Image (cartoon, rainbow, N blue to C red):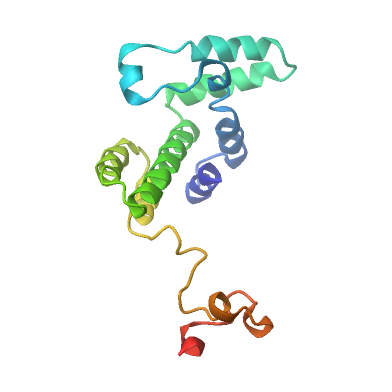
Length: 164
């Protein structure tokens, strides 16, 4: 969903290609796992080989392999958007950790923001960092969260004015 949102914001992007690329970008990790940044410094996973092996065993394997290779080359706008979406997912996870009290999360967020390559990715990253993770669904002034009465059930119907 993040990749599609970024593609929607980038007129040059092929949205269908972005979605497909995002769908399959970690397929090799099903066989190789996903090492953390420290482990990656010392060892290289055989993810490319895993994707190649997978691609030989399914009828649409060539397409998956091509998308995987394009994403890892990070030269096309679609590949850069998919990479940024992956980083934004990590930033979102870190933001939840920060809200829960993880004192290292903000430091990691700052580093992750520097990895974003597209204008769209940077804008969304800043939005994530400056918005509480619950904002999309929780409004403390929404009477529905207090009394669950049917008249307040409709989304957006019961604003802060009614709670006062």
